[in-house]
Each structure stands twice: as C-alpha cells, then as structure tokens.
Length: 431
Image 1 (cartoon, rainbow, N blue to C red):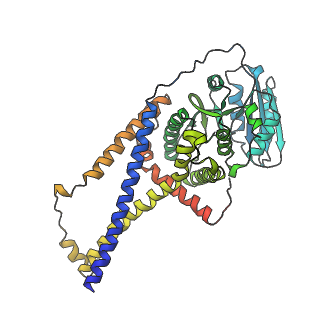
Image 2 (cartoon, rainbow, N blue to C red):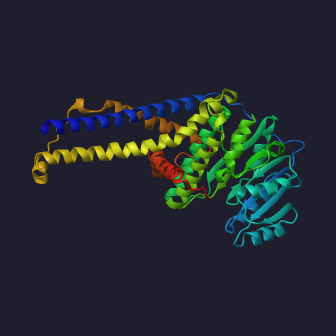
C-alpha cells in the first residue's frame, strides 16, 4: 500500500511538472513576440505631413444609434465642431428602432445645427450593420466615416486622417481611441488597455496586419466599401468582418496615433465581460469564416503570421488562467493535504514541526529572471504607449496601470472562458 501510494504521488507530481513546463513555454513565446513587436517599433516611420489641401474631399459621417439618448447629442456636436470645411461634410444619423428618446434628440440636434448638411433616418431595428448600410446608400462623400453614438471625435481628427488615404490601396484609416473621462478603477484600467492596444495596432499596421476597424471614427474609402458590398452582420462584430474582407481584397488598413477619438467604456465588470466576450467571440468566429486566409502565402504576414496568432490567442489566454489556477492553487493544496495525512491530520502537531530553512540553492532563478524580464518589458511598453498617445506617464493612476499590466492576461482568460462556453453550448452571438 505504501509503495502504491508513493508511485501515485510521484505520478501526480510529474503531472505538475508538465504544467510548469507548459507555463514556461507560454512565457517564452510571450517574450519572443513581445521582443519582435518592440523591434518592429524601432523601424523608422514615414511621416505624413498634415498640410492644408487645396480641395478637401467630401466626407460622409454616419452615426448609427440604438437607445443612445444619453450621448447622441454630444456625438453629433463633436461632428459639427470638426475642424473641416462644413460644405464638405455630410452627417447622417440613423436611429435603429430605438425605444427611448434617441430619435427625438437627433431631430432636435439637426434643427439646432440647421446650417449643416444633416440627414436623420429612422428605421426598424435591424442591427448596427443595417444602419451603416442605410447611411452608405445615402452617402455623397468620397470617404465614409462611422462614428459610434457613444464616441466623440476631437476637432482635428478628420484633418489628420484624410492625408493617409493618399494611396488608392488604402481602404481604412483608424484613429487613436481613448476612454472618455475615466472615473472609477475599471474605467482607468481600460484607459491604459486602450493605450497599449493602439500601440500594438500601430506596430501591426506597419506589417499591414490589422484585422479590426473599431466603430469610433474608422474611416473608409467609399468606393471600396461599396465595391465590397457594404457591411454584413459578421456575428455582431461588423467592424471585424469588414476589416477581414478588406484584407482578403488586398487593401491596406492604417492605424493613426495623432488623430484622437474618445469613447465611453463599461463602468462595471458585468458590462465589461459581455462586451469583451462579444468582441473575442466575434473575432474567433469571423476568422473561422475566413479560414482560407490562414497560413495562405497570398496574404503575406497577415495570413502566415498574424491570423494564426489571433486564432490561437483565445486558447493561449485560457491556458494561462487554467494552468495558473491549477499550478498556484491546486498543487500547494495537494502538498498541504499530503503532509497533513502523514500526521493523521493532527494540525497542531504539523504546525509545531514546521521549520523555515532558507537555502540559496532553493531559489528558482529561472522564475526570477522571467519575472524581471516581464517587468522591464512592461515598463518599456507602457512608456512607449504613453509617448505615442501623447499622454503623461501614469496620468490615470499608477495603481490602475500596475493592475492592468500584470493581471490583464488573467482577465482575458476569464473572458475567453465565456467565449468557449458559448461555443460549446452553441449560444448565438448577441449584443
């Protein structure tokens, strides 16, 4: 019996060793990709001169809205206040069957700004993509801009984005997106998250590997958008789907850091969970729909390198959560119970015999090196993100920044648990 028990314990501890090896592999892969993107960041960037054009092109800005009575007027006002020739701007606000006073406030704003070209459209609820297509069918502009009803463009944003459409192969230009007026801890954590994500978007934009065009002020070449058939539902993530379609047709998507737009973020963990679950699930399902591009040399770095990385990211984050919980909680618990069993669970005897003997050889230098490497790289990334976003380092609180930096991967893992749960039970994607 003693021999059998000893073999069983050795087998279990061996399984724990495989967990440690798996985590080590994940750490090394993460370090590799982080260094890769930092090397991309060191490449010289071609500057775009934001000079005053002799003839500014016509631009149509569409604001799709569903039950956005709290923010729709402010969103419309941000368009009216754009530093762009008024005669070259067309604003279309589409009410997607709202049940609150969104439509009423749209009409009130249109009356207030009657000197501008504003069109108000009301339709039965059909989803954001149908509202965008309604705007597209009425668009007069050479460029088409989508502005979410809870987002607000800075006055100089459009002027700074239009010059990036110099090449006819540029299909989408994406602005720098920030959290609007963060107040609580969760909003401030998202503020830092957006900074890092946009820095990452800037890096992958250099390789033409962007796979999403967020709703807040992403700008399209209207001709290309119509050529591709407009927007589709895309598992309720039409911004992901249209970006993948652009990539499939070999059009470029550019991330701009100097053109800013702010957006309202979830204020509680429940809303954040459902938002990120929708984003991640939509990303996974859309890439599966476009699986012919994965590992396809015809799409360069996007097909061979980036899409497989995005496709596996969910499994990556989920593995971190599950193995971290397994390794950091279950293993110590098992050892504790095993040691207690040796003294017939006499806790007092066990406690009296505990000794704390520090030996230098017991230090896990590998983990210390990994931890220090992670800290140094995280600081570098944060500094770069602040610099590119023209923000003061730690401006939204150092505690929020530290928590976001070191616990974000775990949080993403829990979001992905929700994604895989929905897929396993075949739950439909909802807003």
